Image 1 (cartoon, protein in one colour):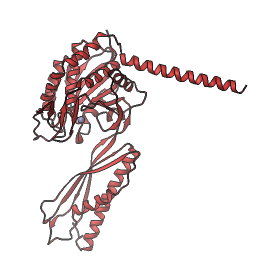
Image 2 (image 1 turned 90 degrees about the horizontal axis):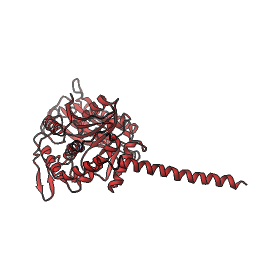
Image 3 (image 1 turned 90 degrees about the vertical axis):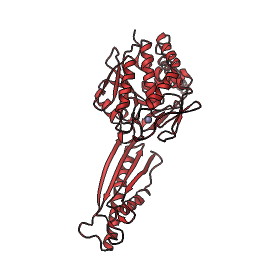
Image 4 (image 1 turned 120 degrees about the vertical axis):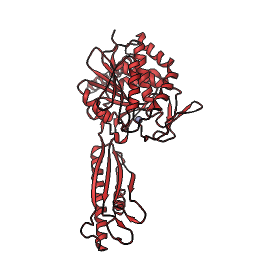
Length: 428
Ligand SMILES: [Zn+2]
């Protein structure tokens, strides 16, 4: 008798699992299709395929307009022209973002973005060289690929007369790299937060992974200043470079956990004027990252302590040499250059379902990654967001040897188009 209810429970349980997986499969397929037979979707995919060459040529033109950090305005003017020609209402905001609107029937907003800035300074040669099927230039893929895709998608949606429920914003944004500190996306998220349902940031080419979690990071600039002097006659005077060196030696012995993964890097050092002068200042920039905000805060605390201890040791040495008199002091200035918050896309997000459905339909497989991108900002605010590549192959990002190969680019374009159309919902 005791067996009967157990069996019944097991049967019900098995049935439950079967039904749940049927529903999951069903909703995933339904999401994949949107309205599967709507000829406008097939039309969008066809246009993207037909325009692949033109998209690549546009990528070359965009890449050859320099866009160093904080100097994106010339490229922005060009992006404004391209998005207007694609039939969008285009505006620029105060931060320098270019925003093209495809109005929907509801006020809800899906934002498709591509950052305009590069990591390269103003005097970098950004002319594109061609070698076989490859294009070579700094910034050609990061983020020439994303920007060219943004334009190609806007044009294809326009030509296919796409009408959607949600409003789609095609945005070329500023300040994604380094000290730009995501200022473009911060302004966009703030301006649209009440209506913003999904954000897709197009960045680079990769289709084998998608960024669904935001890596928290902090960038800190540390400056130590002192009286300076002559290397011989003023020997013993507290030396900012020595103090900084002592601080770095203390800091880099810190143990960071493997999980949550945490990292640090002293990336730049500057200071001094000549080999026989005691420098008046020394400076370094440090990059701290972690999967956990708590670990990140602890690491920053450790950095501050280590630098202060380095200064103390140098002052002790100066005292021992009888050179720590009045005015012979070291000063410390800590400047936080950038803070990128953490966040995660929930596993059950319709955004993830739409992307996986597009992958299914296109026979693509992608893994989920954590990274530091424009998606950090919406994710940290609880707004579903991903960062993904726009197709093709590339390498050498952030180096002068960066390259891009457009082979297979249409897969990336189709993947974005299907995901956005599923989320936006087609209207008659
Ligand atoms: Zn990028």
